[in-house]
Amino acid sequence: MQISEVAKKFGMTPDTLRYYEKEELIGPIEKGKNGIRNYTEKDMQRIQFVKCMRAAGLEISFLKRYIKLLDEGDNTIKERKEILVEQRRILKEKLDAMQEAYDKLNMKIDLCDKFSLRSSGRENK
Image (tube, rainbow, N blue to C red; front, side, top):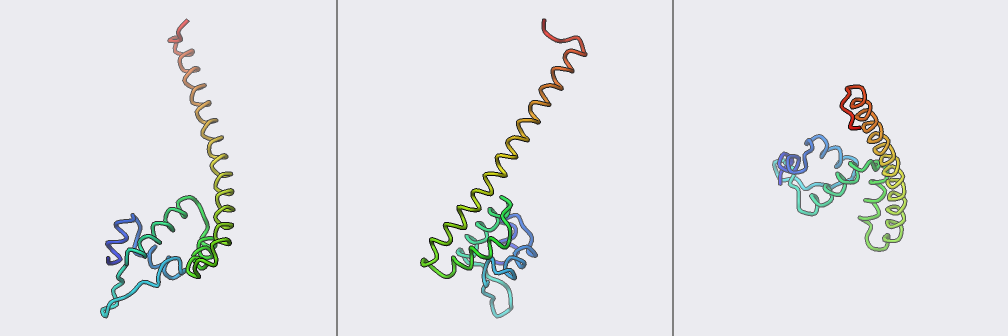
């Protein structure tokens, strides 16, 4: 697939794909004689992984380190797992904080609803 097709498929810009390639998160992407990038299925799997991890807030530096180890092969599985476990721990902390904020927002919304009903005289007695 060409860059425009891949960008559309993953909902990102061609510039983002070029940036990921420059940062060695994907690729190197093969280019035809005309210089046009041709993404393989393996490239797209890597893009999907990177996009998912970035959406979860994982940093580029983590991804670069992980992918470098991934490209080195199976002898790095233990180190890759350690990295993933640490990132999972960090993500869990973020999720917990977000859940707490979400719960507080719901509580405040409920209070606003109760106050609105009382002040409008429509409260059930």
